[in-house]
Amino acid sequence: MRYCLPVSTLHWCSVAKMCKMAKAAGFDMVEFLLAGWILEHPEEAAEMARDEGLDVRFHLAWTRQTSSAQTLFWCAAWRILTSVGWLPKQGSTFWEMAPPIITDAVVVYAENLLNGLQVNHYVQTMSTMKDGRFQISRADADRRLLGGVQLVVFDTYHDLHFRDGGLQILEENSRVRLLELMVADYKMYGSRIAEIHIQDWSKTGGRSVWPGTGDLPIREFLLEVVNRDSELILTPETKPIMRNVADGLKRLCNDVQDLVD
Ligand SMILES: [Zn+2]
Image 1 (tube, rainbow, N blue to C red):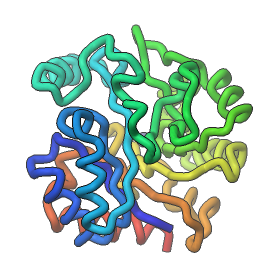
Image 2 (cartoon, helix red, strand yellow):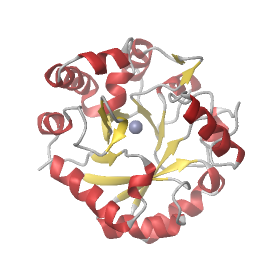
Image 3 (tube, protein in one colour):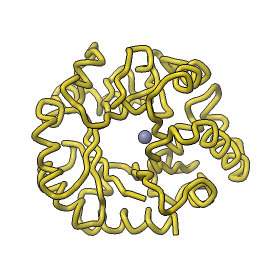
Image 4 (cartoon, helix red, strand yellow):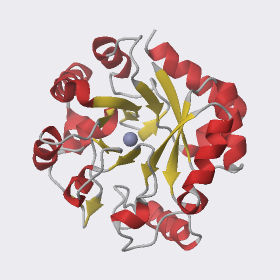
């Protein structure tokens, strides 16, 4: 099992310092969000991580229109983040957001299966949205994914969310039923899964709550599907504000390790 920290230029400190802190906290890898300085300098960012002995992968960003968070608050936040260059601008093409020069793994969204992907593109169990709808249906995404060669990034929240009536399914089902749904999908993708995004969700706190504290059966799921000695990568997805201090990062890494013990 390897543990991976998502890193973006939204953190207050520099990319180099984030890499140092990630290593000190016990992470083995970093997953750089392809936005801002990192999008302009992906090779330099990768070098900084490797200098700390960390493996590297990248994660495609989203734009203001394609975000799944479209409340008034988030629309205002996306507008500001786009204007300061932290998010790619509206209308950016896939190849502008995932420069082909990158040969490390890049986690992309499911609708990018329509773009003619490379083998270093790993497809997340999530589509971005347009006008309130997923840009590709889950059924179409699964058909293309299972018929292709790309590896899969299984996101515990988005696996449930990215389906017809996903939000309702999350709200209305018991923990036991959610576990059944996640395990069935995990088995369907089988050995194609390279990484799990551990993203918890709660009825009151929404998504990206601290891993293990929400309403998703994360611990039960990992117990059922994961072999602790595997090469699988576990990447906790939390709200960015919770992971930018050294103590927070240590606690995050420990808490994720505890979930598989
Ligand atoms: Zn994810």
